[in-house]
Amino acid sequence: MAMSASCKLGTRLVPRLFFSPVRQLSHGTQVMYQADSPQSAYFSPIPKVMLSPDAFHGKVAFITGGGTGLGKGMASALSSMGAECVIASRKLDVLKQTAEEISSKTGNKVHAIQCDVRDPASVSDAVSQLIDVAGHPSVIINNAAGNFISPSERLSANAFRTITDIVLNGTAFVTLEIGKQLIKAKKGAAFLAITTIYAETGSGFVMPSASAKAGVEALCKSLAAEWGRYGLRFNVIQPGPIKTKVIRFDGGEYVQMAGEFNSLRKVTNEEWNMMEEMIRKTKGS
Image 1 (cartoon, helix red, strand yellow):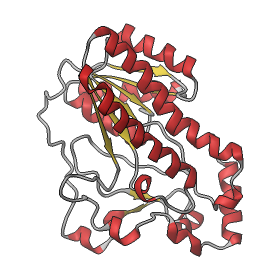
Image 2 (cartoon, helix red, strand yellow):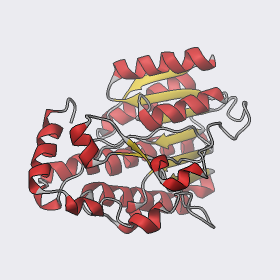
Image 3 (cartoon, rainbow, N blue to C red):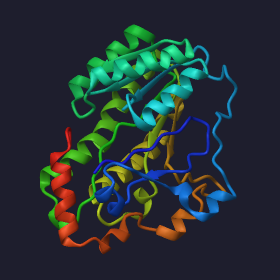
């Protein structure tokens, strides 16, 4: 069961989209918004980008998973602020459509490059294309991800590997390949990784994702210590909750939910069977 979210860079990344198992079963892919909670009536989300319109003028941004969802939203926002964006994923047709859509709205170049982040050779080829068409990136966003919910006792080795290959290995392959090129060229850049609050706490029913996302955060912390001397900066965001030095902008979700998917213990075996069957029938799952 896929999860999705969309935002504009620089905005407060709430409300967050997430699936309710009950509504998912009865209403297809309809999603619930965190904004449905009572407190959202008092704290509405900020719809506009808070940076200046030319904040990324002359910059190149590389976004994995940039054809849909959160990646598309970030590419749109960066392009609207002047960035020359390069979006990458496995589905070239989706990428090209998104690139044309964004470029037509912003008037700035958006390039589409096919890349399977799980494959080091594919990543290396994509990075070569990136540098050829746009130059070395100033912004690198590791957004490509995969996830599904399942009781851990139902997981196969392949199911676990599928998630960790995309989330952890994919992030590492992209970061290392681009990082080496930037170090060689003596160019600084900012790397951003998209993780989640349960990377810190762990959570039932999404164990592979929690493990992989925790690894991504450790990767970023490690490289921040090691590669800062090369002018490479590393940051992590956890949509919708965003941890800052003083507060989490999550509407109280962290303290309310702790392990974000722990409430799924209420789902019956029959409901798990139904959802598992739906997942297997979903194209691309």
